[in-house]
Image 1 (cartoon, one colour):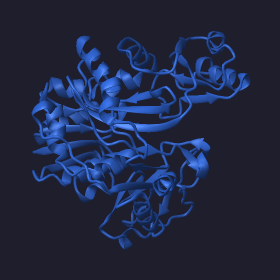
Image 2 (image 1 turned 90 degrees about the vertical axis):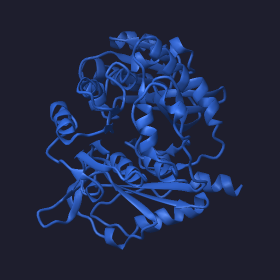
Image 3 (image 1 turned 180 degrees about the vertical axis):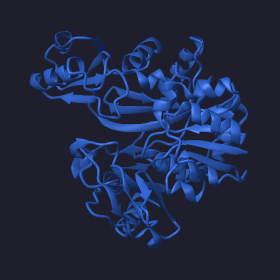
Image 4 (image 1 turned 30 degrees about the horizontal axis):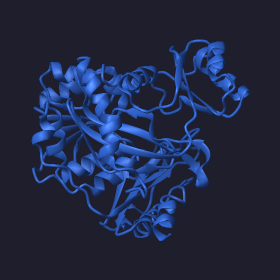
Length: 423
């Protein structure tokens, strides 16, 4: 089978590596891909993730049997719908179902209707309406309704910050036209849980925990993720979480005529009242995917193909995962997350051992053929170990072999897991 992976980041590289491990030996294509993905797939760097026409034309011309859509933007734009019209199997929801990520208000309405636990919320269209909804409860969470490249959420500790955020989103239109969702702040520890969905049922993967802030100790601005680990000490039973959170959403969307096929990613807060949803994403998370897929011991291709068919997961072999721990460390470029540095030569990639997986998130090839930085998050270094300390030691040892000007990384990824296992 030919499989086309849409995207060119670390998540897509992890997907490509996992699919390359399939005993079915699929022929892999990637658009646009990246220098790392090129080691296992034929890349089409001239085709961007937003060029839906070209992506469909490529899939048709190549006789692709399955398209795996990595990023959220083409899903929200309707790539799955276009592929369906062309008769091509695809892993990823339709535009209507992808509104779970494309619209914060839509996601909140679905959660409320399905009885899924989440923070109290209100949809507002003016600054004053937003301030009235907050009603002096701080910290308050303010979210732009649409896609904002991970930058459309503000946790406001006070009235001045809340008013500034509302003004930027609703009057300055920093992220474009659209309303804002104001919600209560949830206190606790975050957890990421992916579920593979076939339109009828949601089947859990293993939980992971990521690190959003740029600096150690969860200091500094939010990023797309500076590292992750899996499993998570003290995580609730994943079957119970999926039964209470993912499955009701899948059931409601099916009843409304927009069945969800793909991965439903719940960003959860573990509160004193139990897990509550911070947000839903309609694709694999990054960098949690890197560790979760490295722990996967079953055939990813079988699972993804089954999810494209109504009821397909019921007949598919269950997913299985290694008992090993996985730790992922992200190497970011100078200036990230406010900016990024491009063109810095990366050294040390050839010195890595085969038991560590390095996925390319923001790299390119220079005219001389050297691998250089080409984005904010540059590389993801993932290692397995018998415990968190072992996996962590291997990941950092490998990460320290890789050098480029302005390299940034956190030094505390999975440290809390080590401390909890030790205690």
